[in-house]
Length: 496
Image 1 (spheres, rainbow, N blue to C red):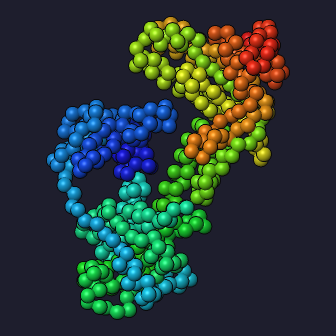
Image 2: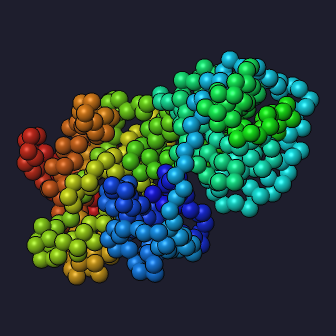
Image 3: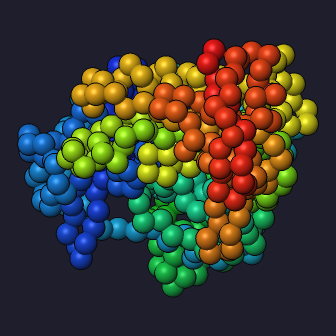
């Protein structure tokens, strides 16, 4: 995947200007039996719509737009926004450091203490690197430049790599670099061997014996230099350097420089982590309450599995649908129906999020929004009960939709909205193979029934709902109506 999003394999620079020509998920490249294909836009469905999304500026192969996946050949040019890339045959080489880890794990270990006055000497050599990093636009470029810097400034360093710890999983290579060859994509190592080395402080390893036959098997590696990467009280991983191909062994001065460089890399990784967690929490707020989104972000930061166990809460539930939608579908083409739904989902979601709710589900033309009461430790604004926030959102949804449908559909397609409030169970329901985050309870079912009883362009609520919002909204009785599963209920609708 290529794009501005942090989950892309190749991350493009991000700025207000570049967002006009490149997308978060600009294009993707796939491999099938040794053949490579390029496609425009996202490979998977995007969170906002649940559908695949084309790029904002398009993807060009040899100057022509890519509308369907196309096979790539050496010599092809790929154009993404302001950038052009040329397809070439890649050199097939990999790096496996297990032999180096084995020969050095019983070797001579030289460590340095953070209190050693020489430990800060390495930072004096980083001034030029800092100036370069300030000019780069994304974390990927900064990390790559840092690894290249290591092989440039440390004569013995033939290979440099960032090996990251992963919660509940084995460490993995984040980036690797080889002197005079560039980035290494096939970088292999044994997590068990790395764990045995116990990288808790910067240290230099060198083999005790220099057996010529072993040296050939080890690609001439006689020493390795490892420094821990850490930040925020957490161990992030290891900066790994080794010498090979007849290079001289590492020195203690190299260890000081590598230690300083690991501090720079740790800062970059922490910055990347904070950006990711910030975006994660923002995205989670689109689907969960603020308190749940915050807790999920904290769990992600600490490497814990998400805690979404079902719990009983007070919440207002809102259901909305489009009156006359079935008739609209019969009279219009699927693409026109899809265009209307995309606009509808966008407007409804914006109104719900604006008033502190989140979209629980899209079901055809039905939208279900949830507005939870403030959790412990949260102080809601005066007059901002979950029912009032739901009523405000409902009123804004009616207004936002009213002006947009005539131009989009050629006629009026009013909303019908129903809502109720009460105790519900919210959280993961289902079984291990199929879990779904949902709200369950009478308030959910009553809100669904009220939506069907609402007048076109109206907001229906029960006796209980009316009592919760009447201080701000004028309500008028529609009479006693039959609600499936609940018998007869008195229905009101908001008129102010």
